[in-house]
Length: 125
Image (cartoon, rainbow, N blue to C red):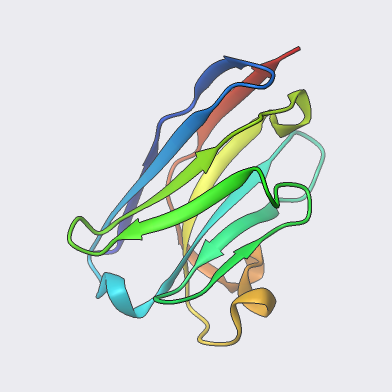
């Protein structure tokens, strides 16, 4: 059974850091792209960052502030978020990407087939 478990959300002041973790199980972790997405009420789920075995992708709004990494030994993906802004406030989800296309093209919610429960990130101004 494919499972993803996101954790690490919380309340942080603007400019501060936070690290999210996504622990996975039930599939050959090193073979698949894993992505982080976020959603605020009334908006579509946004692709924040994705990572394959050798490539990474970042959305324009987080480029230069967020860093995605993966630990294949622990089947876990991390999202280090620095210089957080109030507009980063959202529920963050990690997801298993089923497509093997280019990472820039598939870091989209329609290419995700398994989702972890979200973790809320709140950035206060």
